[in-house]
Image (tube, rainbow, N blue to C red):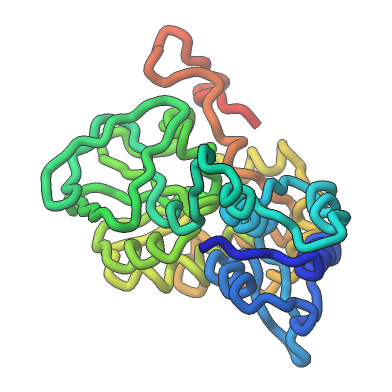
Length: 310
């Protein structure tokens, strides 16, 4: 069943989004808090205990998955101003027999895509996954997905990147096979359980900021005990692109991650140090191609490099 969110909890969520933290005792719904913790949208720390905002998009995704049309603070204000217990889509559906009711559990699974036709073992049968631009394939948690050892799993923070993954083909080895997995909007327990069971190589394609690196190091890596190798995707020219973009605003929201470090991966540690020293970040979407790689006649090259949007 979907979680019913009270006005008091909406008020607490509003404060959390605005101030980035709230006292734990202000949050009245244990079930909702557990869900927010599971999807890594918040974390608890300190004495007395405080709830800290970790991922606004993931938090909004939890509200949406439980039937509340929320995209902004203004939408939250709407539910607060109702003057009574907020009504979700699931509750409205009880009064309309022609409304299709979808519970949040229905979205527990894997959202995936691929560059090219990819053979996998799905529900104990060999099947093909096909790429379709602008879409991702959702696999329900009751299904079973198995991969050959030579397929590389790429975890992607932004689902829109998964849906348009061919725009990022230039970042990957063209001779290898990849399965791209959304780990942002569709953060579910099943995703993490599935990652725990794979022995494939894993690459994390996230935002180039301290928050994204924190998710990789402290949420994803602990799940990869059976993986034969794992790494954070760092394009060769990323430092030039970050400096050219000069995006500083988001860095100011990430000071809680200043102590983060990667002891075992020197390449990633260099990226962490670079971000801290320059106080700059970059969203992964900024690495998309300006032209399709499949059309060599219109590929642009600037100083011998493929043109990318920044």
